[in-house]
Image (cartoon, rainbow, N blue to C red; front, side, top):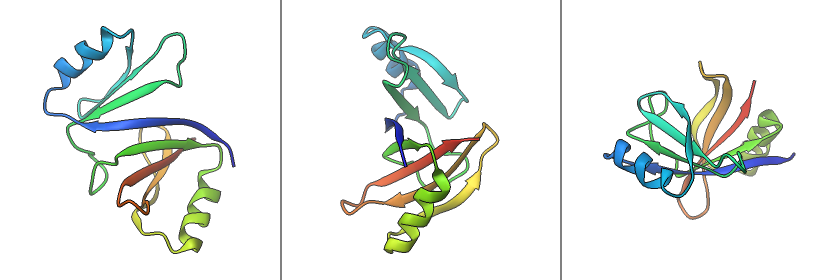
Length: 115
């Protein structure tokens, strides 16, 4: 399994201000669904940060997102290890398949793959 990118997820009540702040560092908006905004570096598109008001399709907002090339294998590995699955594997309308798992530090990780 290959990790394609890791994105910190920040819960925010000040989305426009957050976007403007990170744009000063050279980030550009690459996704905006209203409840989640993702910014990326134009020179290194896998360098990203996401801001959430809440997660519309999951019970919690994940602390980070990890994109992998085989989300089915990642899910099986986590499930088989006994890790706490916070949100089941499912397809999302914006073209990803994802699940949430809790790491040993109590952080929730959104593990995803693009369909």
